[in-house]
Image: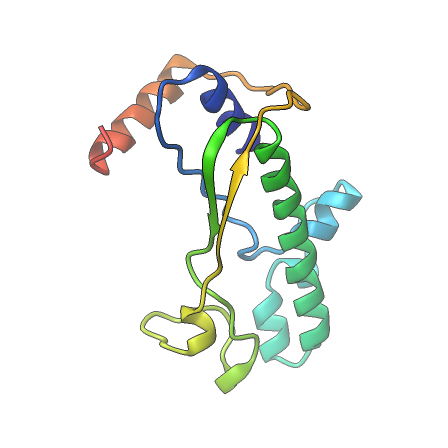
Amino acid sequence: MTDYTIEEGRNGDANRIITHYTQPHLPYIGAAYREGRGATGLKNPGYELLEEGRGSRDEVYEAYKETLRWVLDDVEELRENIDAEKVVITSDHGEPFGEWKAYGHPEGFRHPEVRKVPWVEASAKDEHTREPDIEIESSVKTDVEEHLRDLGYR
């Protein structure tokens, strides 16, 4: 995701770019990424293990935070490799982590921790510390264009 955004930021003609990192959603992949393996065990069905009593809240919360740190490192690297007067870092929802016996964000769940999201404004300066390693096939680019058009962005 970071490489694609850097590529677009350097070579595209968009005046805005929205980059959606799906992490730190489940599966929590911070430790798996660090160890060079796939997400397994606690990192994948984290909430289920917690609800069933086979994992502790602290274990799941640590896995969540490690994954969050991992993605925020990529956000920082992105900020070092594009030029932008304003960069907004936010989230689509918060996490209750057991408050009201809830984990995740069940549909219609209005807990304050789920509704509270960060909003951080920063800037970005391209220091060219990373060169994107991507290949965009024309069929993929066409699919992306179609999806953007379907969503009303084109």
